[in-house]
Length: 179
Image 1 (cartoon, rainbow, N blue to C red):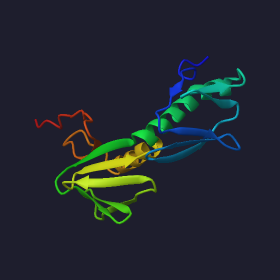
Image 2 (image 1 turned 180 degrees about the vertical axis):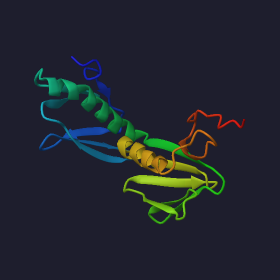
Image 3 (image 1 turned 180 degrees about the horizontal axis):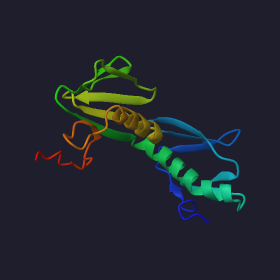
Image 4 (image 1 turned 135 degrees about the horizontal axis):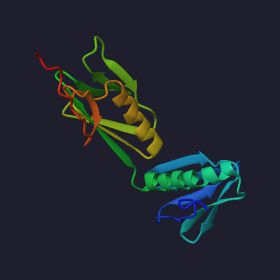
């Protein structure tokens, strides 16, 4: 049995979980509603104020997805109650960010500004032109958007400029020494 998969998920008061047709799990809470289709062989059982993820066979693929399914449902519950936040910092001379309509506009030293579309369900704010805050209820969407923005100019080890996660440590390098 999966160590993570066998743990139950405690439901906060204002959160409801429903399993619909085609094994679709719907989690509804104060911040919104998320849906996810369960893999074959994985089921959900509700007990007073808690949810348990079960599997119907000991097949290798089903065993592999058991803990993953439990973690994803737990993240959905967390998302509709508290939401998720990812913060990024833009460092470099002349590097700045701004929200323009439904796009994030990044000036990263290229010959052109980088426009990255903001997906539905995310709130992106920029403070002081260098601090980007990504908020949403879907953990995967928040993390993927932040990773996509970071990938335009990851922090480089010589001067440390680029887009980094808040609190991310960038290992610096010396540079060439002159003889």
